Length: 119
Image 1 (cartoon, helix red, strand yellow):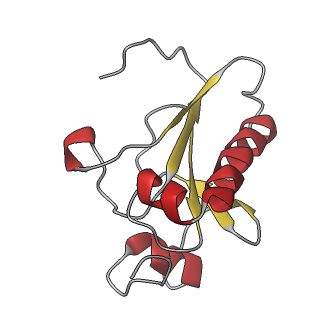
Image 2 (cartoon, helix red, strand yellow):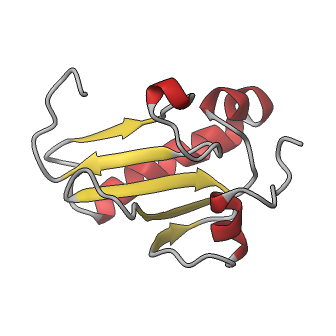
């Protein structure tokens, strides 16, 4: 069920404190933590605490929480001192786009040049 914790979801387990993560920010609705396989000097994931499989389902069910995720991405960039040099916020949706954990999450990437298009 959307919004409810999923027993087999890695990110739900991080929210519950069952799996360790290097948390850098936490709000009532979000958690931000360092990616274990960083693709840039700064690579932080911002997730909603409620389980939604991807950004589109989060937007449809809880648009305010999606706004919270994006606002926290900006605060992470400020905290990491990449807000002035530039950063990227990425939502991968579906396995074909590289999504490996099916709990909505934003990647905050920065600290090096990020050419476009990626990949």
